[in-house]
Amino acid sequence: MQSLKCFFNHYIDSLFSNQVEKECIEAIADNEEPRRARFVLAFTFATLGGWCLLHPKSVLNVGVRPQYLPPAGPLFQSSELLMRCFGAQAVLNAVFLTSVVETKRTYAAYGTALLPFFAFNYMGLDILTELMALDFVGNLTMLGACFIGWRDIHSLKKYKRTV
Image (tube, rainbow, N blue to C red; front, top):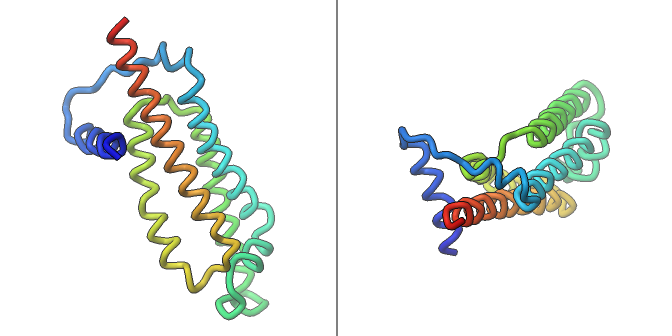
């Protein structure tokens, strides 16, 4: 729990700090752990986003309770289009994640930005089916990957200072 508190404190401090921290890019490049966290994030976005992009009708039919589905016709087609847009953004995010420079700030900012999605999961409890708990599991996976990536980079920086 102390590490999680440190994770968010570092992020808040970095927002108001004029001093840019030197990150241990060389150590990170030699270490696989933070890279794995980044690819877990990208894989989660690519998988669930790809499903929304390629098969929006199945996501709507499987993920939304029948009483909340729009009737067939233009309204359902617009829901499919919005689902495709959501999926395209998620896939774009996955592509971005595969090329981002890994720093503590990157993982802290990303993890913080994920927090509202848990509120969306809660607000959708009546609308979404139990299968859409996949989204909640995906959000937990990504938040955990952010914490692990942040922690591993933090550990690498401490190691680098002692060497």
